[in-house]
Image (tube, rainbow over all chains, first blue to last red):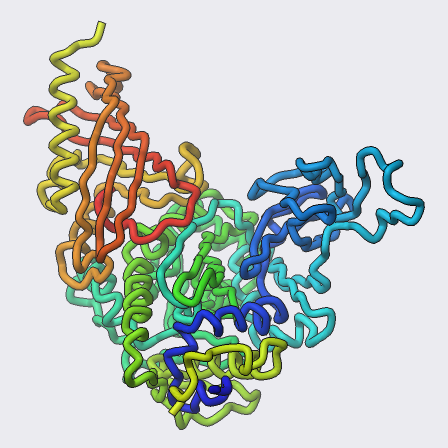
Length: 438
Length: 161
């Protein structure tokens, strides 16, 4: 029987981590049903009574804003005989009524109505039969996280150094808030969820056509692939707790009319609206405005385990099986800016992201090829040794060249810690990894 | 009274467009489009203001050219190997023979079977075409493909829809 620790070596990882259904089940218990995971954004349920349905792993949730404005996260399951009480993705309701026998819950999850109550005894206590509640819910910069563990590190402790990047992301708005109001790009691929990471080494190869497109547009002045090589000053960061980021736009000059250096951030159009945006940002942030905008573009972070913020988009990862993953992506709209600035963000999103775009389909293709390749596990190890000798900074962060596998090792380290002290023990998993961790 | 001659011309054009898309004949397919054009595959809903809601595809002429360039320049891994697609275009109706600027508004349904790397996917869509009568025949000024699956999780949709 292989212990999880034998599957994660300092410079390599065992295929079973990505291919074993037993390990997938253990990940649900040890990571998704325990750690802080992103569930929704406050802007999805702005008003009292607003709700949305979401998932953590295989459990469906209702994220609901009660009459008092408080956000609760509930299991979508009638406490009577278990039918889902809500089938809409978004809505506003005073009550959730189970269609089976009419049990009714309010938007704070309390059981407020049971038809024909006389046939229950005197000790029947509705107050104990509210919708099952995810015990801990917290919010950071509008991003709502939930943890199914009654106790554990606080959200602030879990996010640690990642929290500042969530703040950077929303500060592209002069009001400091964003809205996920522009729809959801929904996708699924046939590969493991952990392939959706932060990788600065793949760009020039996986996204060869993106480089071709930029070269076509920019002509001879384009320094092809320069930002994504071992000679680049761009960086890869381990922020602790599995959170990691790439630093790609350090040299972006934020001026109206200039495109961003990255393929994934929208520029500020040289239009009346673009200039108005700059003036609104200057009103809000003073002389720091260009740097605030640069930092927001620069957000390219994985908040472990399931949230990514990249340029102007929010991406949420959900495992469906060892070899099957759902990715929900949202272009984040800036509050308090001219409409055309947000339109630019939508068009920029569609260029790189989404199932028919020019970027992410090639990532997804690689993830699916990974899954095929890893099944051929005669030699089961993946090598994650780039930049292995990077020294920690003063604040504990590890910072490597952009092509280093600092982020991958950060995530595998967090994975190993979570798996090793979780309720699903290594003894429960991986009969078929026996003897393979050699 | 349906203008059967016009319906015949429109049908011929839509069949040609479908054939070229199925054949991944990107350059010939691109040549069917007007210089001012919109290729729109809505996301989540069938209709909305595309300035305010994300789309699966919302290409103007420049981006449509980028799309075809990308698929022919080599290294578009999601189309290596290319999708094999077989589609049927039916229920073709001329809904406005005298549209704005001498255009013809047409609606139709498509059923597409896509096969790639052993996985077969089935897509259905309502389509709305705006065809401009150019001196050399119809050009696509606008094509809107309302997928039945617009609000579902989709896989690789990098073939011509």
